[in-house]
Amino acid sequence: DTPVSRWTSSKSFEVTGTAEAGATVRVLVGTISVGVVQADTATGAFRLSNVPLNVGVNRITALASDSVGNASSVSSNAIDVHFDETAPVTVVENLPSGWQRETVTVNVIGRDELGGSGIAATYYTTDGSPPNTASPAVSGDGHIELSEGIFQFRFFSVDNAGNTESVKQAS
Image (cartoon, rainbow, N blue to C red):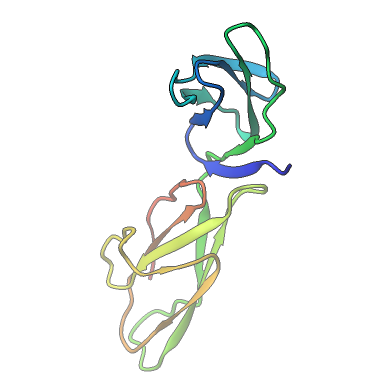
């Protein structure tokens, strides 16, 4: 089976799942045991918080054993958690200076580190006010059409792991 893949910018992860009711569940990152929890005696649900992650891909699996010591094999439903702690970098091209009488196309180019989670969105304002996640946005590399006026373009990008670039200004 292909593992489920998730991205995070957090140094820890919460693992949840189900096992035999009352089983002891050992959670592994790669081949390293990072915690043991008891599955609920009625539902078999288990939860282990604060599972430590390394930068890059962390394969998380679980082993369960019942009250008489019968152990499962490593779970077939592994999770690959990608820990990405690097914020993206965004560049704006073709932003003219001074008053514009015609529509201008501005290029927004977002870059994430090699093997990173990729750009989720670039948020921007054109009036010099600070952008936020409710501001207009483009996904990945994009083009923004600006009509007549003077523009004080401010922007930042967020990657798919949730890392946020500092607000930048281009004018």
